[in-house]
Length: 72
Image (cartoon, rainbow, N blue to C red; front, side, top):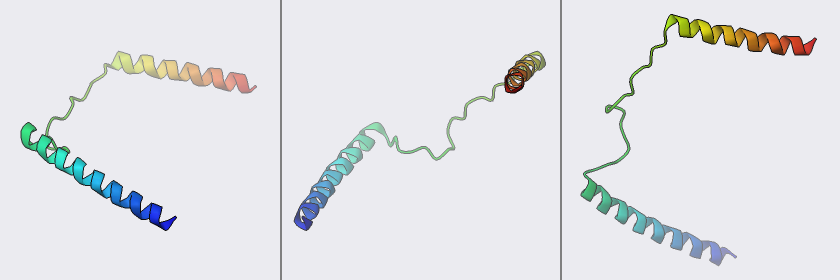
């Protein structure tokens, strides 16, 4: 059984090497493309109007009122 584990480990390590090699090739072709460091594009913050906030707040109040009414 230990032999099976050792064989599985060797096979996985070989597969990892093949994947790492393929990633190196793809990165060299694509110009990097690694994990972002966070210094790139940041999505715009969305602003909501005062009226929109009031509609959302009122809808939430109604939902909570319905929950409270159901408990009684």
